[in-house]
Structure formats: structure tokens, C-alpha cells
Image (cartoon, rainbow, N blue to C red; front, side, top):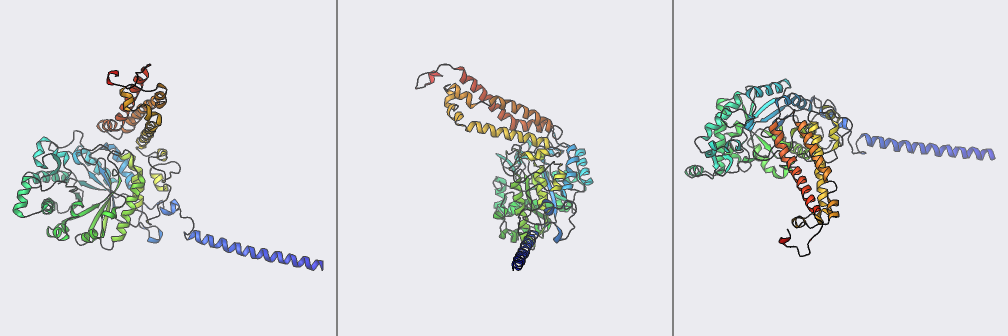
Length: 549
């Protein structure tokens, strides 16, 4: 009986063990199935989201990684600020091609060698521009020149010789479209641009942000005689410019910014023939472009044009004096644009995306993010445009971008910019980024010093005016001041060295005067204030009066 009981117990244990093994097997099988189907673990593997060869070859099927957007990816170079040396293009253009760009939009402004005296003193020569185009050709990049023809004409209208061309005498922004010398000037500028770009198939005529129109006496007279409003005046000028181009250069496709069309009816545009003679570039650089670019607008555009371009921003669109690039902001801009393209692609053919990289907000504005500082953002946003899934961008830098930018180690994309990770890369210009990061860190330290209660309590203008402050608190408030003064000197030296093989001396000096000199002056002034306050060893009785100064 004892043996039978032992055998029964053994059989029971074996049975229970077998049942447990079966249950565990099914649990594990279900988890594996869920993981493989994406139900568990929302984080996307870098190489799954962006295969290493995806940038170079977009011929794969939808199931195996075809980009959602298959049109042109044109990188905008805003040369009205910080124009690179010609030698830098030999590095930049191969990089752009490797990252998936198909062309460049060259906004020369006063860097083009116009024969009139409207070009900058350090403008490119015709030989330089030919060399730039040759580098682009060798890297299979389309070159699209941009010449402004209405608004943003500051580089011309600021000059005494051309002040009569202004729509509003005080504002050198917009040409007067009815002045009899305006169109001949525009036509001559177009001719010179086209003659130096014989291989280009596109010409961008700008025409955005025409803030002043129909205000001068000449325009008011024409509008009265023809019973026009400002919209008709705009359309008349643009139509004249486009007609000139199409008559003289029929092989060119004319592009222009779309913003001035947004309040003009479809029929008015069609009546002017612009539905057949231009392709608009719809631009919006915010994180929510769909808020402004409504369903009604897209329906209106779809009734006018068969093909449309759009414009995003990879830098230069968050603040006119920002010297580092907020990558997450620009990624969101590109992702929202992809959603718009997907939503309306059944109504409109989206021919291409122009990734703008503004260097100034206008001709008079200070420099914002330098191109080398924006290269990581450009690389990432080109990858976003080649995504096969709207929501699959990884939290770490994809391998092919890391390789292109010669980065060492993992770079997290969840860390706010500027971040140390990019300094582990070796792309041409990373030393500029490193100096920018160092400046940002110093600026944060100075701000922290100024927000400290000791600083706020004993270094107010009142304390300084009457030289009335406790020495111990003054010393405590500026404990790190000498170190900050040394740091700004090192940053200036580092930045000058970093920029000199990319930019000319004019750009270097402008950038240093804009971002280094003010902080340096501030620290020097604070040091002098500190010395003055610490000179005193006795102080007046209250109330303090001017005679005590």
C-alpha cells in the first residue's frame, strides 16, 4: 500500500508539472506573438524604422519600407546671411545627396554678382557660382535659383539709387509695381540669374510677404482708373513677371511662394492664367501648419493647380536671434506636413518639399542659427520625409544618419538642444556646434547667477547707483565672475577658429559682434561694478541722497 501511495503521489506531481509547463508555454507564445506584432514595446528599433539603405534607394515596396513621400526633397540655402565659402560646398553637397536630398534652392539675394551696384562687397563671382553648380551636378542635385521680384527687396531698395522704387518711402521692403522702372529692373535681374544657370529647369520668383501694396500715389491712381483692389494689383505684377519669363524662357518652370494667394479666389488666379504658368510653394514653419492651411484652402488650390510644392523649415524659424536649432520643433513641423500631404494627396500632386534653412528673418535682421549648427536637424528631417510610417521615428539617432555625420556612440533625440551628443560627431562644422554649446552653457550659468537671491538683493541698479551694498554679499554674488570672463574669451577664440574654414571674415566678425560681444561687455561691466562697490569701506546714513554719490 505504501508503494502504491508513493506511485500515486509521483503521478500527481508529474501531472501537475506537465500542466504547468503547458500553461507557461502558451503564455510565452502569446507574448512573443504580441511582441512581433508590435503590441508590446512601443519603442521602435532604429534599423527597423529607417533601414540603412533607405535614403539611397526608395524603390522598395510599401510593405518593406517605401517612403510615404516620394517627391523632390530640396534643401534651401539662405545666402543673404553667413554665405559659406565655395570650398564648403564640396563637403556639403555630397552629404546632402547621401542624406536623400534631390536638389538645392539657392536664395542668393545680394550674394549674386549682379552687374548693377546692388550686390554685396563679398558677393560670389560668376566663376564661384559655376563651381557651385558643377559640384551640385556631380552629386546629382538639381539647382533652383531664387530671385525676389516683389517683397523682400531690401537689398535693392535700401540703396539711395533705388529709393524711388519703394512702395512706401519709409520702408525699403516692397517694390512699387506701377513705377515705370520696376519691371525693367526685375527683368534684368532675372536675365542675369538665368544666364548663369543654363542647366536649371526651375526659377523661383519669391513674391512672399508683400506687406505694403497699393499705398503709393502711383498705385492708387492705377487702382482708381482700373477699379482694382490690392489683390488685382498683386496679380497684375506677378502675371507680368511670369509672362516675361515664360515668353523668353519657355523651358523654365516658375515657382513662387503661395502666401499672397491665400486670400485670392480661385477664379481670379485662373483668369490671370497663373494656373498654367506657375507652381506654388505652400509654406508654413510652425508645429501646427494645418491650423492655418485649412481644408477650404486646399480645396481652393486643388481647383487651380495640378501640382504643388510645400516648404518646411529645418532651422531659422523659431526666433530671429536663436543661435542653436530646436530639432524637436522642426521634426514636428515635418511630421505634421507629412500628415497634410497624406490627407490631400488624392486631390493634389505634391511635387516636392523644400526644407528651408533661414539665416536671417530679412535683410536687416541679425544672423540666426548657422548652417553647421543646423546640419543635425537637416539630416533628421530629411529622414523624417523618407519615413514609411508617420509615427515611427526612433528615439535614438538612426544608424545611417550617424554614419553620414560620422558620430561616435548613441545620440538620444529626446534630450533638448543644444546637447553634448552632437559633439561626438566629426561632420565638417561640428567645432562650430561645440562652441555654440559652450556659449549656451555659459549663458545659462550667467542667468543662474543673476537669478540668485544674493545677486538680486545686493546688485540692483539702486545698490550700484549709491555704491551701497554689503561687500560679503557682493563677493558671494559674483563668485564665478572671473571664471565667466575667462570662458567668454576662450569661446570667442574657439568660435573664430571653428568658423574660419567655412566663412569669410565678414561673417565671423558679424556673428561675434552679435552673440559674443554683448555678453563680454556685460561681464566686463559687472566686473567694474563689483570693483567699485568693493572699494567702499564706509557708507552714509540713510536716507541716501544724490549728494552722497
